[in-house]
Length: 390
Image (tube, rainbow, N blue to C red; front, top):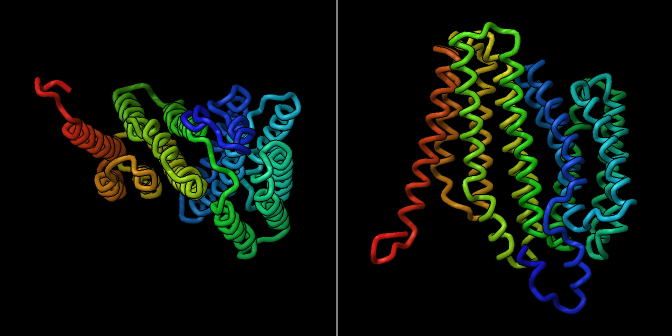
């Protein structure tokens, strides 16, 4: 990481020494819970593939992602290199697992468990940040950590109510997140670019994996014939194309762009890019995963409208979030991905009127066209030597 290799000014060396330059194995272990977490969020949409289910899934993911991303920021600012730190992370990992168990019915019977585990996670995070995150970060976390605990209390109360008030208690935390983000953007964290980009790339891999798992789960139990094989290949190819959109050099460019930002802007930009825009991309992949779960009942038959909209809407949201991420960090052109997002949403009509595989084929074509066009444009922009070689 560039910042860790530069000579530090007086008084800055302790912070530079704390920032992780790469993701540690304890963080990889910690992220295994995220595999289960997002699968539980997808269950909400699979059980209720309507506007209510999508809204509940979006709120739950926004709440969980805020705290999960908070731990990525924690290990960015303080390397988990002591036994005590690692034990605390394992404790938070267990609390996250309990929280994930409560996710599918968080708006109902398991709301109390969801809120209680959220409080435990928030307390562990705040304590570790205050003890290991440095003086400037500790001052910020006093408010942010308190706000996170309040969110947990609101979620705990939601377990005792029903109806509109339940929705209010799940929505108010978003306002607290906004206030926390605005205060945090004023400084105190100065995220390390290399670790931040690598950690979020790994979390995106988990989200892509959930889509692949949905293909396997959806295909299981059905006759292995041409329709199933065609649908499976198209679905995996689509997920791979979406993966390509994220990892086609954008990860390395993101690290460079963050390092080039003035220190006063890094936190604010990172909050937008890695919390908000990654949230959109991950939720888009979960919508796609939910839709793929039912597509394999009969891949060559028209899809029910709910599943077709989940598939098309999921790809559209992912591409829109990816375009926003590219725009925030100036990683490359965004217009083609925004146009592709609009066309992807429209493919739901094709899935409903023709067949699920037809929708997948067109979606794959849309993403591939974008990738090819962008790579052609990038290759033409590379200065060439007089002999014509790059």
